[in-house]
Length: 259
Image (cartoon, rainbow, N blue to C red; front, side, top):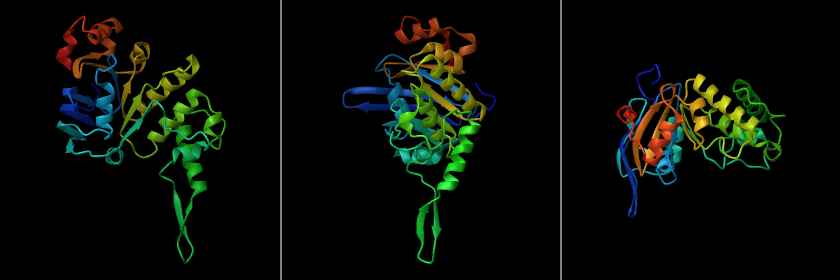
């Protein structure tokens, strides 16, 4: 648990059904400021449904959504974003034909009003300045902020997507398989970026199947199985084998009590 005793985000007894399928069943979940929580489980365990519920893409059938100690109701992804919850999905949602600045501001373009008959013009200079500052703060290395996304490596593209998520005063960042399909060097860059998000005081939730990556970046591991939270592990006091046992159902560790 992080030093701050109050979770930045907390879910209580969240349930979600799709027809006959009970995707989530009375799930509790929390993430603290300056903490990385890994969400793991087999396919169909409920990980993606839980993250999409946090992100506002799904509305739970029951349960409480508490943000910074206050219960809220989230109907849309925009409402979650307005709270300070940003999501980076596996497909990254970047536009290959636009440059880095345009992608960082996609849908949130800076404008300036000019003339007696007001015209809203893109504030290109200010957008480029802020984009450069954010990338520098996160130690994201790209050739140029005016480089087209299509020219960047997989790790650089992932870094741009993550940088976009922290430009707007976000407090929680959700990352869906951030190192999937990346090479060794690119994976290292993304893991270092996740650590920098934590050092900035953000709560970070990572979905991952790569337990080596999980144990390198996460403070805690939450295991989902068949729509339920079945175990929680402190990465400094547990092993990947224990986590695998909880994922498969082979073992029910004492860590269940911590969840």
